[in-house]
Image (tube, each protein chain N blue to C red):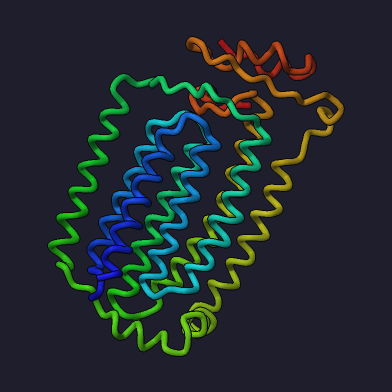
Length: 101
Length: 210
């Protein structure tokens, strides 16, 4: 018995939505960043599910590239958050609304 | 039958840990819930016949990236009183409502488009016969060789950029950079309580322009 591709896609959609809601409702920049990671992982899950659906490996290759880009993105984003914290003393995104240093 | 039990267990844990990540007040608890979620997604990869991504997910995400997150959380100091107040009234409920709408839309679209088929899993199993890593490498290093090399440029640029961002300014290197934990009570604009703890030579550029 194989699990239907639809189930994975629905789980992926639910996780992506939780990530989106997290970005919208949380105020801590680090938690917002974690929610973005959750969104990226949800999309990776649907990519791998589609790779099985069509019976080739291209989706898995794309998920691999997406992981690489996500690693680079995490490093740069965390460095920005640390720089922001050094300047402002807080990681709350509501306090960083001046568009200047 | 076993795979169905495994799927539903993992799906439950994945969604529950994601929701826990969303509602934890403490950033460290959020990070731990996210690690659980990454492990669940890794198991999904394994069930979908992608052993390589299973291992990479655990090493890169649950290992490296989350350690980096925890490192930064510890570096910045945990602020346990994370304000959950909203700037725009009713934003939270609108966000949850729109999220539920998105899930319903995806469920309908997938059901109409794919139905309940499990796809061409037999062909993927045939491709994976010599091992998933070997099959993936054959695709990656032939058809996608150039993007793979470009990825290394991306990583180098990211590393250089982070070194540049993390560098302290030459003038401020001597000043003690002790960050202030902003008191969580009330509505603050984030600039007023900051000037007290910053070194005096830096206080000037933090004043808001009125």
